[in-house]
Length: 176
Image 1 (cartoon, rainbow, N blue to C red):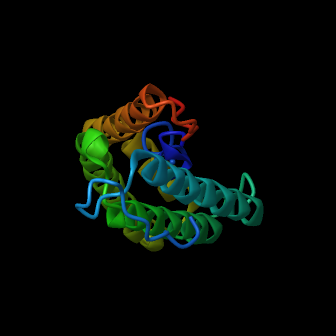
Image 2 (image 1 turned 60 degrees about the vertical axis):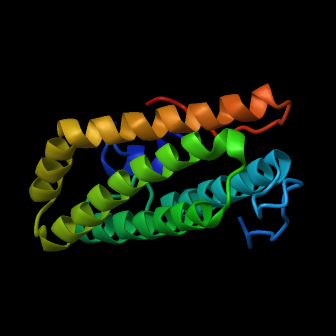
């Protein structure tokens, strides 16, 4: 999850990062998933995101270059991110991962909100220079940069929890 690709694609260096979620319950009897189940599902969600985002990148290669392609590509990636974040939000994290899970979701929602706002603003752009100006402004927006950093940090925190529990995951939490 490169500050999820959305975070890198969507808002340049700052804001550019599943199939059906299984319904297993953990051993605690409280309805939460076991750590293994939780991290398997988190891995599947973000692997699916990565595959869909890569398909979008192929559809709109380096793409962008004209306002309409940028608008469509950005909106599509934002929708994929929204879906992935929603799937993760539907998971009942085990006790040891709840804080990192909630931070991941909270930071992700800020990134998503900025991405949705950007998609709306891109829809109004009529020239490539307007698109470039918008993207430049976003790369310099301290709130968006902070949200992308929080999102990346929360991703790393989830990976650390998994690894501390001898669970092998790679959420691709690369820093841009």
